[in-house]
Amino acid sequence: MNILSYAILGLINKEKLTGYDLTKIFNDSVADFWSANQSQIYPELKKLVQAGLIEYEVVIQGEILEKKLYSITPEGKTTLKKWILEDDPVLPQSKDIFKLRIYFAEHLNKEQLLGKLTKRQQKCTNLLKRYQIKFNDYQNIPVPPIKLGDYILLKGAMAQLEAQLVWLDESIDYINSIL
Amino acid sequence: MNILSYAILGLINKEKLTGYDLTKIFNDSVADFWSANQSQIYPELKKLVQAGLIEYEVVIQGEILEKKLYSITPEGKTTLKKWILEDDPVLPQSKDIFKLRIYFAEHLNKEQLLGKLTKRQQKCTNLLKRYQIKFNDYQNIPVPPIKLGDYILLKGAMAQLEAQLVWLDESIDYINSIL
DNA sequence: GCGAGCATGTAAACAGTTACATGATTCC
DNA sequence: GGAATCATGTAACTGTTTACATGCTCGC
Image (cartoon, rainbow over all chains, first blue to last red; front, side, top):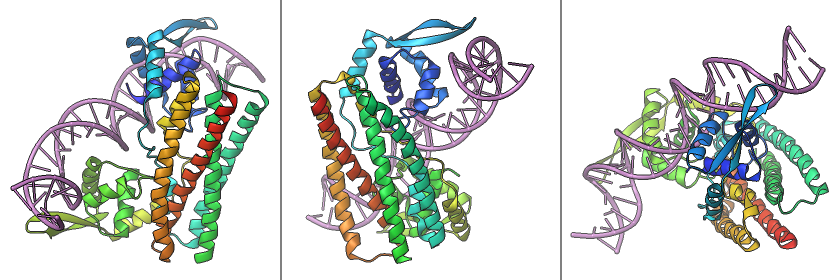
């Protein structure tokens, strides 16, 4: 069982979902800490059904379109709970092309370097704004216990972005002071 | 050319390195924003030599051990500079198993949930301490322009960890207040 | 002499990306 | 009628991990 299968299991456990729903979720709502391509989803769902951890009912959409609505089985729930409690390996080794380029930045002149940093600032600001809109929705509706994960993770994503923006600001100041 | 090959190119550009050196660097100093396994390094080095972007001299270590010390070629420098200036795709889609588990945390009771969060706090604190020691070394020696990348990226890693610690603290308080 | 670390490589399995392929539904 | 979106799947390729395989060097 790879991590993706647990991710799928966890999402289906929250609510019944189709493969298409899962695809959207991995590209939108949980993308900050996990992602997956559409082409990974369907084979993985098949494996999970074979393993007896999920099952599906065929639902007719419109006139003839058959969609598979997946739900978790009791065995799936047990497997999921066990996995959630497992110890986490050290810390995630994330990959960040932007940081990699900046690390090699002795090649850039001041303008190029500042240009790259301000572009990133812009992107972070835009994403943060989207998160803040989401957050305002949560604030209005009191949520525990079902939405606890959503709430905490959203706050986490926002905190990381805010920290990155402060770091970018400081880096710009630093570069201005030395170059 | 994949990203790893540019990462290798950038590192070799800073100083002459062996495959073994690169392996260590990808597991230690740059692990915060890029990582690679030993088994990826050697085939990639071969490709870069074939492409004429790096070259090596054989250095004898001790009596007979031959090690290959790689250096960047002029074509390699050109290729690297071009790549560094390329625009970065949106924002990195990092994967964080810990966050994924917390997202599914409605399965945990208060103690289990707080246990997971405090364990992560411990790990973040330990890593932050190591970064702070590194940082103190940089502070004593004035560094630009060669060590600019090291300095900025280290500050970035520290900022992210500090933000995560604040987030974990707030999350613990939040959970205590609602559960 | 021994153990930790230096040094280089390959093979197999697994995970992830990009592209292909098809068709229905919903809303305008 | 057409476009965006819903919906499901496969194929080929690329990237990553884990394991295998070997041997030297340096310091104690």
